[in-house]
Image (tube, rainbow, N blue to C red):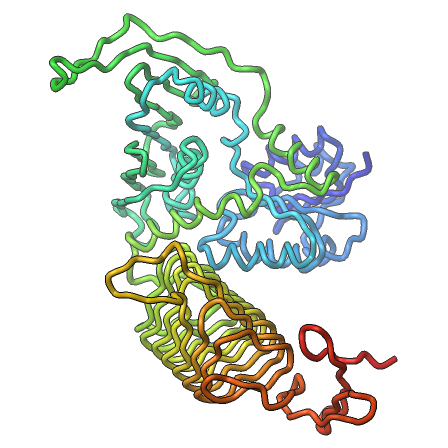
Length: 519
């Protein structure tokens, strides 16, 4: 196999990645900020091309992918640069520091048809696979709690705090094992040495299934500890990765005396569970290489890591409420953004607006004052929602839609205050480029066609064709409009329509008008 991967960064973890990549015969280039600092590695790998210039990597046509193992704060910037250069990317944790940041990178990768993978090695560890097997066959009974401890002697000053540098591993594993996100979370930090980068973190999690989670991580600890424990009613299991990986099952059982008093039947000793001899790092990199070759999603694709990054970001905000997380869009301080909301790059959300859970807003949109969106509403790119507009569940706007001030969307055709019809809400779709005038009302279940125009104050009861101009109560069609918004002039006897402003021609179709492509 000809080398097609470049490694960026050869610190402690970068050295391990270099060994694996070289054994797989896929690495050809290595970037480091200081060649002089790594002369010993250059001597061990003289067949590789070493450089201090990232541009050489970006411009190398034979390099199709990069593996990023630089300090954590550099990850998002390097990922974006690599994707812009057309490279598939594997990046060590954390892949990003906010959901918005990660969505931006995922969007860029999708636009360019590239693979973006995060390095979460425990997802590939045979011990985690064995734990999942125990859970799936009910060997632990009802799972009660999961605990982890991850400590090390950190290098000060810290490049990353204990949340993003250590706890991110365990957050990812908890969500991966349990296949659910916590309903409640709390974090407590100890910053004895570095006020802006706490060296110790305690995290408490509560999951919808009733499982409780505890995480303790610290850079300020004299011993290296790596341990995950799961406590169930029929057994307990401990994964330790301190000297060599071990997995031990303890057949301890929880019983209730008289149905009320809990008792634990302690077994004499634990039972070692044999683990296959395979290196998780190698398995992880092999997954990346195969994903590149087969153009498929790897196990830890960036999209799959969104819940972990969202949880870490939420915990970070509870620890540092005064720190504003960088995001590629603008939200006015008076606006409220619920959890599980996606907002595209360049979008602006102004005073007193509220974006409810599950809503997705595209790029370069403008939402004016007192706009309500959601829950679970989809808004495309380049939309403009003016003041006092509410987009309720069931409404979908495609790209380039303009909603004038105080226009109204309904979602219940037969509303009663005392009857709950949430399961009967009808979908309303506004197609690409359409305009809805001020104070217009759109009844639910209708479709506003592409580049149609609804006049101010109109009440729309039925579907509006593409490029149609409708006015009045009830709305009736009075003409046709161009993409630019200009009223079209009909040309007889050809039955074509012409825009005097754009010099475009349109013809009738079953859906309304369609632009004639001139050749």
